[in-house]
Length: 182
Image 1 (cartoon, rainbow, N blue to C red):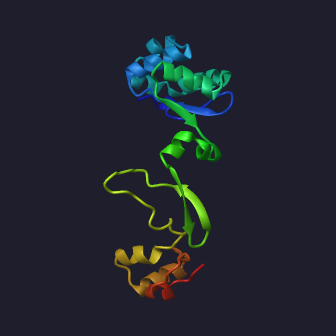
Image 2: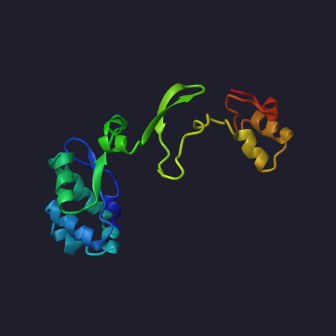
């Protein structure tokens, strides 16, 4: 696979990504870019890897000449895997991500109503759901240290030495008294 194509490529109005994972895709991508000489110049993954900066420099000169949509149409017509690189706001508006239910809104005990990334897998027989929000910073410090065999006194000493932190959480357990809640 060509590392040169596994990074955002600057276009006239944003960025895209295109993936030439096989030699055949590399050839199609070079033809589509109007760079057929690159097929013989960088014929193997090893050649492409050893000249990655030259390829990146060429891409960085070429791609800003067209918009993201123009490049995507060119690569899609050439059967080169590709896609836009979105800002967060653009991702939230993408119709395919809406159909796939990529984002979900839920109530967070501290932050209130938030929008986050949904569970990626969709299964007909075992539907998924977000059962609890992402933990706050340090929320599970005590539990993790306990699972590694640290006792309450050791955990309190580590937290006092600022070797870790204990975040706020909606429910406290008996070990919480050993920690300084920040």
